[in-house]
Image 1 (cartoon, helix red, strand yellow):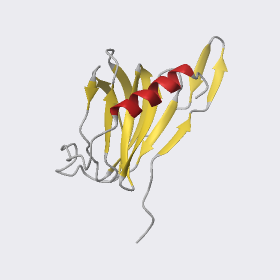
Image 2 (cartoon, helix red, strand yellow):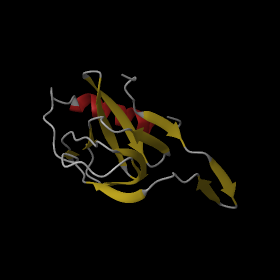
Image 3 (cartoon, one colour):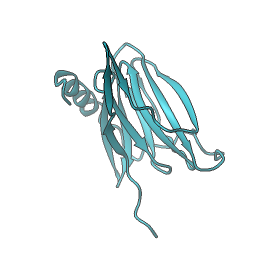
Image 4 (tube, helix red, strand yellow):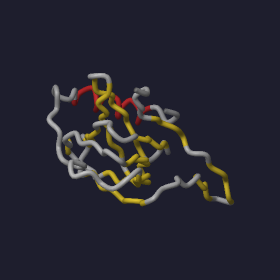
Length: 146
């Protein structure tokens, strides 16, 4: 059996063109625009034959990833262009502790047809640490280089 895949986080390459900054597009089979409502806490779900590549274009949220029997809280915001790549089989969810909606682009890589259990809520093995998730996001907002 191979090693389990994990979530990757990386900054986008960009070039300056006059007054505009041009960022590297993500290769994908399908591109979705996703809106995460303000003051929301999502259930975990998993994709079986799909890799998500998430990039926040307006607002901020915390991506929750369940790996190795623990949650990882990944703060993402529009002022720090980063892509989070979530391979198949990794449970994940979104937390938006702020009143404003968050908008992101998901450049989806398909590895096969959709599975009937894709997007179905999974039971949380233990509660989220909402305070820690919000702290991570607030700390990122205070540090423009993060």
